[in-house]
Amino acid sequence: MDSVVSIAIVGSGPAGCYVAQSLRRALPESEITIYDRLASPFGLVRYGVAPDHQSTKSIQAQFARLFERENVRFAGNITVGSDVSLDELRSTHNIVVLASGLSEDRVVGVPGEDLPEVHRAGRLTRVFNAHPMEPVGVPDFGGAVAVIGGGNVSIDVLRLLIKRPEDFANSDVDDTALGQYAQAPVRRVEFICRSTVANAPSDPVMLAELGRIPGVAFTCSDPVAVPEDATRQASARAKALEGLLELAPGPQTRVQVALHFGWSPVRILGADHVEGVELRSVEDDREHRRVATDSVVTAVGFDFDRHNWHGLGELSRNLETGALDRGLYRTGWIKRGSRGTIAENRACAKAVAEEILADLPALDPAPRPGYDGLPEDVRARAVDYAAWRRVDLAEASAAAHGRARKKFPSHDHMVAIAHDTLAGPSGAGNH
Amino acid sequence: MKIQVLFGTESGNAEMAAEDLALSVRSDDQEVEVHDLSDFSISELQHDALYVFICSTYGEGDLPNTALPFFADLNIVRPDLAWVRYAIFGLGDTFYSETYSQGATKLADKLNELGAERVGEFGRYDASSWEPVGEKAVEWFSGVLEAAAQMQ
Image 1 (cartoon, helix red, strand yellow):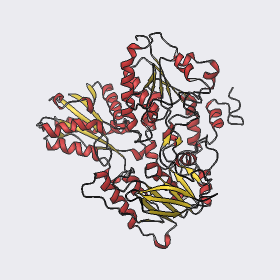
Image 2 (spheres, helix red, strand yellow):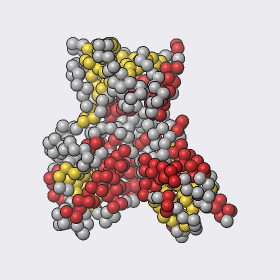
Image 3 (tube, helix red, strand yellow):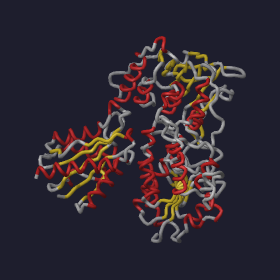
Image 4 (cartoon, one colour):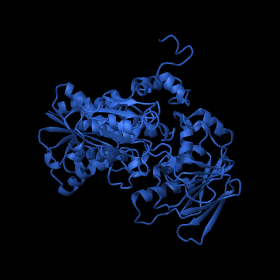
């Protein structure tokens, strides 16, 4: 294929940005557009990484270069599936790469999960991140909550729940959510990890970080030590946990955290309301443990959003390949499942880009117009990068003292700022 | 003197720093090449170059995956690097206090052990600072060039 290749990438999170990088390097002349349903780019970096982990969010600076210097177009505020169909996108671009991630919280699959006090980690993280499509706010957790899941998202949730408002300095936490939560913070957390300490999926440094929050008393009735020949990561995890257990805030204790390792949830207890969780030992299934709680947060991974998967039906389960169909690919979590760090998407994107390059000669050689081939009303609603920067600057200047930015919780408001059509004094008189 | 920038990256930030550095060096009319350590073999090391390693840290203070084959070759082949001059800039995050910037330290220790000579300060970049990594690398490298000039 000799003509200019037009490429559509669906989703501007890490998966989409990394694949744009790889494709831009390999195809300097190609026309690349990254579409996003939101007016803001960067997806999970902005709304999935916890608001108090700003150094993790600093990867944004790298992705911003795509739009600032590398001639990649951002087209936000366009939902593939409603504003434009996937078929339309495919007929106007030579290549379409789905990089829309997994946003639906996976269910644990135990009885009692439909009780009203069972909440989901991904949603909660988005609430604290002022995601414009999570308007419901922070739930009432009661005095005691069980956090089910032992990975880093689960630790994010635990950390958000046990921090005091003053522990969010320099974050971009949503102060409305934080204020709501501060009305009735939990006093006890049961942290339930199915794996033993040696095999737990958590990053040791994430555990160690918990020890820097004042007023938290940690307990664990399971063995913390790992075998001599355990991996370095397992040893580091055990050491981090030992550090937590040595803390003794005494009368300063605000919140207690009971850690369970090697326990699998069997059912969520309660008839109309959550009353606790029943656990079973993974090493001896005759051994059960009950914890009494008022609510539950599940953090056991992510799955397809049934309402937002581009009408593809069951995506191919062959994880070896990024290709779904002729000219249609996927990368990131929708290829690999919800595991791994942000950086792992880079290697994944490189592999998918190589697949695409290898397939190019066999693709339909007729040029396709790319973004310019989309209907005018679609292009009119698009938020391009310059328009997003207006939102970006407005957020930065609206930041309260001690906040990195104030993320606007209304998507309409974001779009209005982006399109410079905001009613009132700041938007009037510009046209 | 040819400048060879070799980057080892997991998230791409070290690559970004390497490109920024190369851009700034090129605008000073210096000859410069940029290579991903994953595409660079120890047999390509040349006598008349200054090697600039830009390397991040991953996992428990390890080298990034893309730098592991190069590092493994240093360990296995153990080339005599007494004629190699290098500068090094490590990327890390002080949030990971115990392993901060350890990837670059491991690489530098290995190069030193094999006889290579470091030029200039050991550069360190902290992601928690939110400073532009490319600018910090360029700033650091001007000191390296001064040190290199004094050695000649």
